[in-house]
Length: 398
Ligand code: NAI
Image 1 (cartoon, helix red, strand yellow):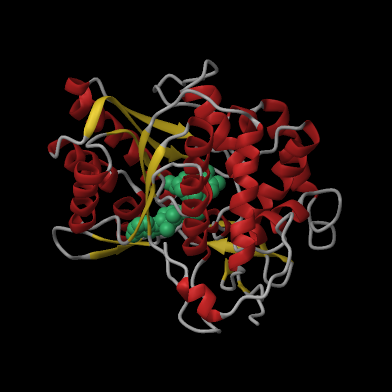
Image 2 (cartoon, rainbow, N blue to C red; image 1 turned 60 degrees about the vertical axis):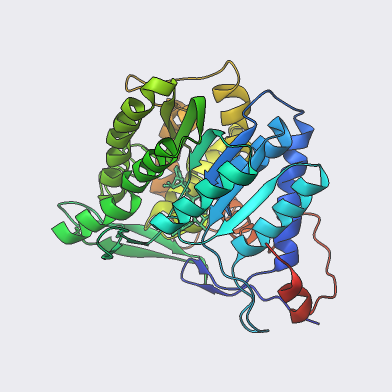
């Protein structure tokens, strides 16, 4: 029988509990079902569908709006008892099994979304097996690297400040420690690389390819998740390399809006709230902001996990009546996080945190660590141990 061990290096999870991942997907499905159904899109393509925001979006749309979905992700399957693959691999399988049980189409593509070949393969699938058109395209990729499909050059993204170094507290979830970190300013090459990987270029390439192939329905919507944050994280996030990549997405949204005008389509930037994900856990200082923010928001009853946030975005905002837009036309579900009292209390709490108290009831390290663990199938509510072998896992098909 396999033993699943939570193995964390820095803030990167290396271990996985495949059965815990399945239970976590089922818990998210139950959350959506508990809210009932809503009218939404019926044919959806989600790029970056296997974890956190992309997965939560897919679960909400499938189990809330009864959408057929195509999910694209880059994950690894099990090799041997020591290398069980990635959580997203098992999330894809659990999602497909649950969706198919309810008569929904749930097609997974596990390959590099940045390549021309992937785009073509998915277009062919939409044309030949998915009814010919999609009415929503969700872009929820987060990656450290991207190979430009035209030049073959590989770019790397860096999470860095821009002109001045940033010094501040950070948290290491491997050994539960609170320490001071210095973040250097990025070089020009690092800035350009981050924009190339995390900016909007690939989103635009997807939309151009889908449009040229005639697989976008009239009135198609495409969403892309951004983050703006506040003065509490601006030096290393909004005002750093990632912020420039997000600004590039704003620009590309305008290009996509022009591209889609003749089919009444729309590109929407969704400024989402801070949540615990594989990608956000490695942003320096961000865990400290999160444990203060989560404490304040959970006390106020406004703290959300990805499934809660994405379900609210699609059910109540995009396909409901509670949309809030800013002056640039971006959807602002992050208004709960940006609420002035929430930010004032978060600021005060951060100023009180130190290595002796960060892991106490004054903050929400417990919430952060549980959510982080849940991403790899650990500490999952409702999980019960079952006997499983490596052969059982290898037999699972995405
Ligand atoms: P995540 O790391 O949980 O998920 C990323 C997804 O992209 C996974 O499905 C992964 O398989 C897929 N992926 C990565 N490289 C790929 C490739 N080459 N080909 C195909 N799929 C690939 O990330 P998370 O945090 O859910 O981020 C999604 C988006 O949400 C990002 O744009 C992020 O900036 C944004 N966002 C995140 C916030 C946060 O606090 N986590 C806040 C606001 C926005």
